[in-house]
Image (cartoon, rainbow, N blue to C red):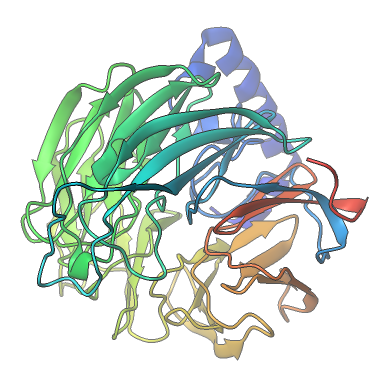
Length: 462
């Protein structure tokens, strides 16, 4: 959706009306749809990539433009263990997932998959769900979801807590992949948990399973080396509602996009075999479009009536597929446009107005296409000071935020010339995507959570 719509006065009034209607009808406790996300949930960061699942913050968000380790840091919280998942926010709570290695070693041999390029971890890990106070950074509550020995290793740039949580404002849904899917109340009471088995990921590089909500369903993408599937769980009970196999798919580490088109809720899922659309309520496959690269990590985003899917591991692919497509349209002229240069490996793309921004591989090389036509607007523009990136970009209050793996965040003005506003440095490893709510910016490193806010001098007491 075009960025200027967020600033249209009539649209903002409609958001308020939607919010009021949702509260009166009890819709605030259901999973968000697009209209609801822009209404009652728009001011929260309910899932990875924000209220509309595209990296665009609420119109009320006004995060800082400049900071460093001594300036505009409201608080810094040390986290238990490690994690690379993005935190989410509901009202005054920030929810974070992490995995903490214990001193206890497994008494039984850990499976060593000869295909793996990593060494199995033989230590127990505590898989933790933590609620932090958004204003003070103090811990509200922390729950031990499970304590287990991981069945396979992980890539040196991955952690055992790489999947992000999500919420409907009533419950919190946390995924530790092979260690289980967990549902909590927002006060930390366990409602249900489900074990979907052990994944076998490419070269044992590990997991990043982020669930998404679609109405009353919690949907999990379980792409692995063999036996891939999509599963929809009843969000209230954890019971399986539908499950569909993805026999041509392997490990992908991407998060599906839930969007509504012509009255039907669609689930758009990227994949090495092809990008596919499913009926979110039944699991019926609607369309497929091949051409993606191995390790299809970037998540799909929507522009007008198209789904844009990208991948960029050792090759490049971007396709714009009409949401109303049917069947396999691979290689047909039904694709709106396609591109084969400069696409991302890990980060997902982002759209402002009709401008589609993405970085090449995991590098700082930025390109921009017209999201409507696929025409190149510019390419190979280097973002200053960032280096490599895993985090996906964010747009807030007329600015683009790009977060590098070594803790540098570059803020660009969302104008035609992309003026560099600030290059902000924190001496920390950051792979999680940025989060903006009201006047606060949250950056999660492997071991810390930073709250950045204007007119604050130095880290405040925890």
